Amino acid sequence: MGFRRAWKGDEWQAFALQLVQRRHGPENVQIVPDSVGGDAGLEFFTTNGCLYQCYAPEEVSDVKKAASAMKAKAGRDLPKLSKNKDKVEAILSGISVNRWILLCPFLDNKDVVADVRNRGIALKGQSLSFLADDFEALCHSQEDFAGEIEQLKALSLGPPLSVDMPTPVDVSAAGETSIGTRIDEKLGRAYGSAATARQIATRRDAYVKAHLYRENALDQLRQNHAVLWERAYQSIEAEETRLIAVGASSTLPAEQLQSSTQKIEESLAKALPTLQAGVITQIALGTVSDWLIRCPLDFPEAG
Image 1 (cartoon, rainbow, N blue to C red):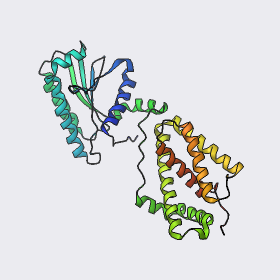
Image 2: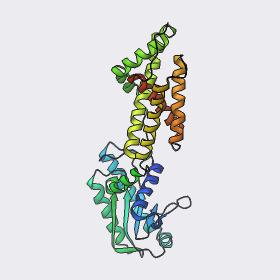
Image 3: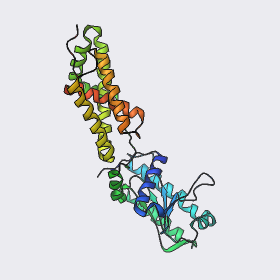
Image 4: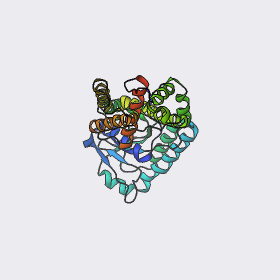
């Protein structure tokens, strides 16, 4: 099972909290605000004695650099439990801590495990009053929460939707395939001599780009937000059926394209109110592109 590796810090912390709450129960997890005086080496803890600190490395492709950053994070935060022992003891109010867990999106290097555990052993040797005899410091990743992630996906509470915009290289490569050819044919019939070859090519690239974005977005919804994906699919399917059965609302190509995009946007906005407007617009444009490729949307030869 592949997991997303690149996360923004606050985004990862929010998702990690969902994972921890799913495992321990929301009523058993306490967030530690860091707005005043820092988080004292823990971002949330559980009533059964687990302290969690979240960290998403900026480096996600270089294993060695990512491991170094994780070890540095543990080196900064584990000592805070000793430095802020009075504050931590007051926060925990009698809870005996048996685990401190550095929760990261991924874990590729066993040296991180050894480093974190050794730091935990050193901390345990300081005999802090709130540490249990079996205290351990560990590093966990999404692999350790695979079950919880699947549960969140089933509830459409999976990882936040993060869709990269297709690069010019991606668009150019796709434009040279049958995708670009089909769109060129449709736009050529739609605009005829009213548009130059360059204008047709520019419009084609825009539709190809939207098509690639749509495919990526729907794939992420399918993998991580099953309920939302089903709603999106039903909305798009309904609009396609309407177009085939009733036809376009205008005989003018530009108006047909605009009207189809607007109808899809409105339908998706109702079905997926939590998605950003920009994402919905890109999916709508990509759907029109898909229709141009597959034929539900076509135009007569322009004069």
